[in-house]
Length: 392
Image: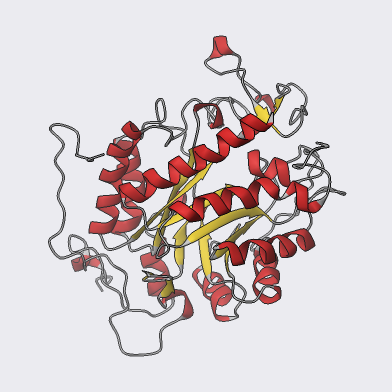
């Protein structure tokens, strides 16, 4: 398929992409946060990444100019890797009716426009693909109160074909999903493969499989949500089977020179649920299959979770995997807000990449601010460079 911009679309690309690259320009010691990271044939210019954040602003899976501006600003301000929000591989895999999708070729056009801008501004583009499972067909969180958020009916714009490993609703008031038949499992695996092929054609540099936060793959991993008695349930080996098979299938079509990430909920925050030790064993299984980096988040699979959130509260899980699974890289995420904090995570070898989410929503220029705080001279966007130093 040839991907061409929409008719009438015009936007400016800098002939020289170096302005705004946030690459160090001085000769002194470079803080770890601003050192490049090479994974396979892709080099991130720094260790800062935009975590995949849902914005609930698409229509029928199609991204639009909001996504161009939202994601493009991070490239303009020098982020090393920008990972596009959770993107559904099937229509019934959307978290909300307003989530992005990559289940058909037509979705590729606007995405390519966004990726081209990110590349033109000197940054690296990634995308997270996933399926929401039993947590699909819900309203965006900014539309209803969190306590009122539950499955949408068809009359409300939702859908009733919710898939999960077992017919267990996420919480009271949420729909009970259909237990997936083997043909459904085969179908969703192929959907991940098809989405990965499209992502490569668009030009994404990094692909991340979403296996966290209580969505479909995460539901299969956890004994709390997976009570199957076939080859996809019961034992640890059976519960990880879907994730392993998706990784194997995706790695066959995702180019060998491009990195593959996997996001996991490293700890479920519920007794009897998925544990940090499970995460280590899982990492040992998937690294030889071609997963380069484990993006270590936590929680999201049970309404009974008791999360002890504090600054950097998920970093120990990234650190544990990094030091117990030789060769695999890890990403740290979760209440990382300060430059010194992020730099310490990298320099103390607790993780290889730092992913920020909400902090970037609050402060899109965080990368440039971090450079100033850490004493690193970096290139600012040409259009803003004249004011990179405060006037006294």
